[in-house]
Length: 96
Image (cartoon, rainbow, N blue to C red; front, side):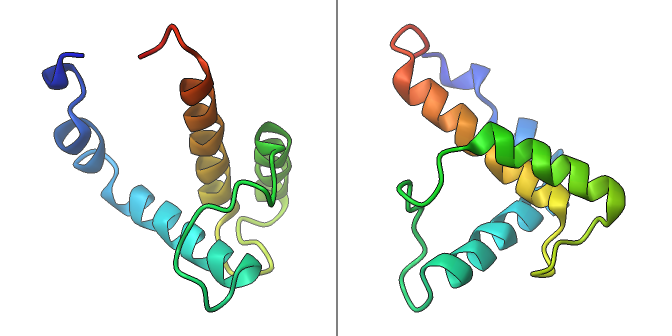
């Protein structure tokens, strides 16, 4: 892997700082909802329907951009997309 081909800061963080902050807040709020008083961690046993959930949040965004918990539906779309991508990359032996 050529690290220069993966510009995490200059090609991601600098492009989308506000969006990434919102997705991080989405993680925090999800932790509070599903595992209160526990250290921040992705409990992969809680939900595995990332693509279905992503689409539900995208549809809900068109009706009301903010979910009942105060988190933007688009933040949840991004979180679910990242979760699906992470799992895909972990399981795909050819992509490494």
